[in-house]
Length: 526
Image (tube, rainbow, N blue to C red):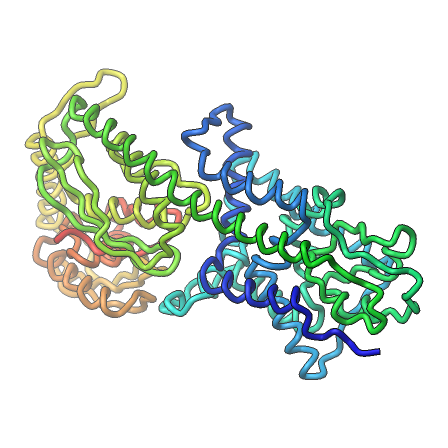
């Protein structure tokens, strides 16, 4: 009895897995975020086809396909699962012991994915971000070469969890898919009534159990098909490895089923791409209408073209911000390293929101969180330090930019005069401030009531930016005040240094780095 090792469905599956890994490695997180987007919108009563259209298209592709044809998403398209499958094969080749829990233990362990799904549902309901703990997000970041330009993603809780999953996969193939995957919890439920299944000729089966040993999901194929001649388990991911391993050819799949799997994969991938294009066109029209409307709002920013940078999923994103008649009229993305399928969604949604709100503090686009933050941070970076007009909500009183500038000068003059009056005690003082990548510590020397020297004790900043930022210390000494302009191109490092000096001397200084959810690098105005 010869094993059908290189079956057509299996070869076809591996080809699709490779293509999906190269082209859409972040599909898992995209689908999960689409569920989050629709769920939160329905919960808040804000669901609309215009806002959630892209997410809805993705779900309409994935969920019905899974219900009708089975979990082809998991077996064919999910790069996160393919990675675990590959590591499982490597572990076997290396002769590493493979953990095979018993039937009862399997049932209990599989409850884990439902607990993870419940945890996510609670977090989404309470609007709690779990991004820092997301291993699949870190995986998506490092699934291409350009993601390795920065290793910061590995130094997170999500990076630690990903490392544990990678190691665990060497000893238990697809153990995350089996026991912890929240999407797997959803798919296992809706795929139980699928039309296409692995079939079994019970007369030909000798009960050798070879099919069970190769199932990546730990499904008891032999027992599961014994009663009705078809595999009913919702854990089956339609990988068809059991049919290729069966020495008796008792297990089979209709060639049409493999074709259906291919069509399912194509449908999901196609709808995925549509889901990234539709929001782009819709939001572009919205942005145009809203930009015309905001010209009637009160003036806020000084006219000019400003440049800023923020950190996205795979690296820096740079934008230019145009201000005309004191209103933000245009935001142009100059460069980005993020994947286009994610970034296009973020660009279309976030930019229109910023133009409408005249503020960078807007809602992130679900399914493109990191790219959304990169754009918001870049706009914030560009406009930091630009004279603004604050409008009190109660009275809506309008103050001229000149008045705001005058108040700033008065504050600086007050700080300088305090120094001239010798309010600082002589000595060497140490302080800490938050920079781009972490804390910055400085020592400040005061002689005769004057700041005479500032030395950097420690910093974890990127050297190319920090070397530029340290020149802000010369301005502090020259003006005897921390109320000085940040260095263009290194604003976040500059603010960290200024906060550290202020902390050492007991001065007031507001460091907006501390207000950002991510310490990503802004590089100032040019």
